[in-house]
Length: 166
Image (cartoon, rainbow, N blue to C red; front, top):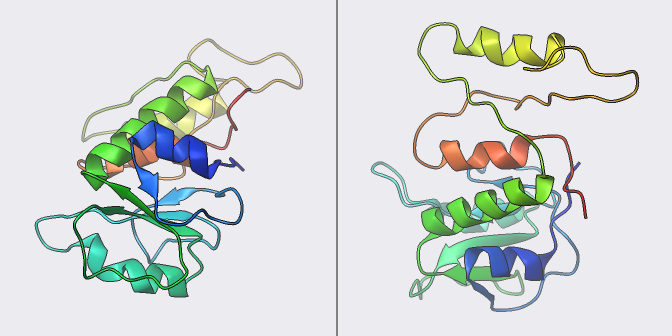
């Protein structure tokens, strides 16, 4: 499971903490229904919902911190740490890009509307785009779900089960 340092995340998304989290984050999540304890909740504004309305729920579900947009004076998380950024979707994108760089891995995107889920499942089973991996070394890691536009296209980076190489 990946582990994310609070200072590193703040640097990646060009944000700042109002108070520092106690430890590292075990993941990043944009949906409180899927949030696991210890993750960073990213509050995204969308056409139908505003993730900022769910920050309190995220902390109640065990979020270790939340990325929110600056200027939201209505957010008071008490002693919970808030990572304040100009634009949370842009912050999520920047974090995903930096995490992807830290993985030092090749990526294969499988787009389309017909057969992309089967391809996403089949590539790791076949050993990845370059064939079977040597014994003891996996070459292909798949995401746990199919991600769709907006926040989903950046959330996939955090669902890979391979931690960054330092």
